[in-house]
Amino acid sequence: MKKIKIVIFIFFIGIFATFSQQKKYITYKVTKGENLQSISIKLSITPYDLMQLNPDLGSKIKENDILIIPNIDYDSSKEIADVDLMTLSERDIVVDNYIYHDVLSKETLYSIQKNYNVTNEELNKLNPFLLARGLKYGDVLKIPLQIKEEEIAKKDENTQPYLVKPKETKYSIARSFGISIAYFEQLNPKIKEIGLQIDDVVLVPKLKATEDLDYTVHTVEKLETLYSLSNKFEISQEELMVANPELEEGVKEGMLIKIPKKGEENIDIFVDEILEGKKLEVAMMLPFKVKQDTLDFEKNRLLNITTDFYFGALLALDSLKKQGLSIHMKVYDTENSAYVSGKISEKSEFNDFDVIIGPLFLKNIKAVSKNVKYKKPMLVSPISTQDHSGIENYNLIQEVPTKGHLTREILEYIKTIYTDQKLIVILDEEETNHNFNALIRELEVMNNEESITIIKPEEGYIKSDVFKENIDENRENWFLLLGSDGVIAADVINNLGVLPEEINVTLFALEKSRGYDKIDNNFLARVNFHYPTFNYLDEESLSLKYFNKNFKRKYHYYPTKYAIEGFDITYDILMRLSNETTVLTQQGISQRLATRYNFIENTSNSILNKGIFIVKYEGLTLKVVK
Image 1: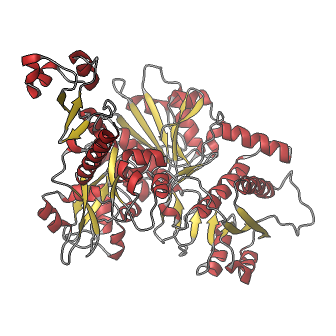
Image 2 (image 1 turned 45 degrees about the vertical axis):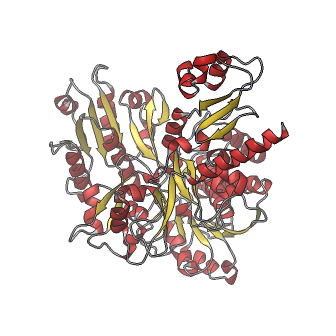
Image 3 (image 1 turned 180 degrees about the horizontal axis):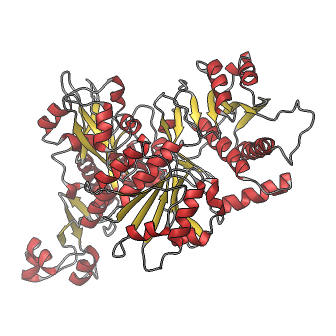
């Protein structure tokens, strides 16, 4: 028996060695003078497929780069991970995809067929002696090795190749793709035995987190520019730059660039993790105005906002410290003054901070940015919605998306779900607004060049008959309200809200301003009101309920939205700084109590949060639709 085990072991080593050589993907080293096109021709693979296998290389490859390429000699039937070995006994030997089974006493042809999932015809064909004299104890049967074809197809569908880079470990790769080490080893059995090697090609899950392979490839034509490409493919210049970092060196004829597919997002999920022994130095700059004679919380709205934000931030610090992060924070009173903010940030101690949270307002952010532009700390603008692209500071982080990004997000959402509904645009500003003219033109392109119905107020309001005249009772009617005039918005919703139920109406707005708070929620529900927002509170969230309870216990009142923002912003930025050393734009999306964070580079190379929710009224409650 011991000798048989040794023989079987030797054969299994042999089969593992054979199978390990039959990899579906192998590596290719770029030689001098080669480019994406020449390699594609050489390997008989399209440039698009090559870029899909190597999404982090882009189209600009150089000598000695390592590429993942398909293995033309790959035979899926020899992939050991897809072979069913569970039924083998210790007396079985595997050679060349056949099992050689030593027949035991009391075994029958029926029991062997059932155990090895083989038919009587297959056994007789491979073992002719069975037809002559039947089965006997001690016979050696040749049985085909069963390949789990459905498992191969499933693995191909749900996994993708990944090139192991220097200093990467099982842990770091598994964490990057949100899986356990055990599952990573299950996908790649050989790494359990021999470990990871640089330039190994391993399989990793195709998660929503890694859908960055969903691109089309475009060859840049003569005279094309970043601006013309942005218009041609209806995506922002920032999105093009993120997908193609080489565009920073200019757009050149013949370049192969990746164009993100319309209606699909490239999503990476940020995973919370605090590195052992990590310490952070934090400055917080808020307008407390403590030098005033009195602090009137009843009348001073800014003081309430500041205090709520600060209390929320303190709870974030408590939570992070309990998780092992060492934080030292110093708080400065900016007095809501650009001069004071500037003088404070001139201090030499600001060289030592990892991050500055605040000031709250753009004028004060500008003053601080001038002094810390070339210094160590990240500078966080926490609540301002104004455009920060005029500030040249690559360490500047704008936490709240601009109105322009909200507009773009709702427009892209409309394009994604549009299926020939009637489009009606409502303007509450002059038609000469070039931004709105551009939006209307985009809608006309989406609508197969059909003119868009435009409704404008006359003498400050829109007559109810105007809505009725422009509604198509035989199809869905989509209204897009451009502008932020609360009076016009109320007029529109009140008119649409009383239409008969059989008329299908949906209203989209660029934002939900304060004027909407006075509108009956029943009307908002009736018109299926959709709008973009940078924060969304799920009242049923256990995390939110815990935060509310904890805040109430500590400060004796329930948190406002500014307290929640203080928590979310402080928690997220410190968690990110304690997790990785890479820039925020490469860390992926996170979602906190009420805020989604998805950082991109602004046009001035600063950092902007583009984490936006699209929400709609479903009944009397809000629901996230994107």
